[in-house]
Image (cartoon, rainbow, N blue to C red):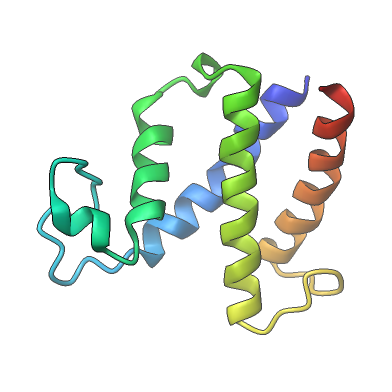
Length: 115
């Protein structure tokens, strides 16, 4: 089932994004708070917001299919940006992140045919 594969694939981006959030000076300790204006203007606000949404659903199967795909798209975008920053070729590199991207792109193609 595609939903279960997406849920499993969200684990690595969650781990990587959590490690990339700059916590120095963060009053919220990396936990997005929509009531704090500094969260809205923080460069990590999108990642923090995404992590909060994903973490809030301890059981990711609570998300409907479209929500899961939306979270998956965000994770793919962030992972591709990370790979580019590290100057990896996502199509030939065999590191864990690039292999994740390759697998994600294949799975994403399947999501577009399922809709």
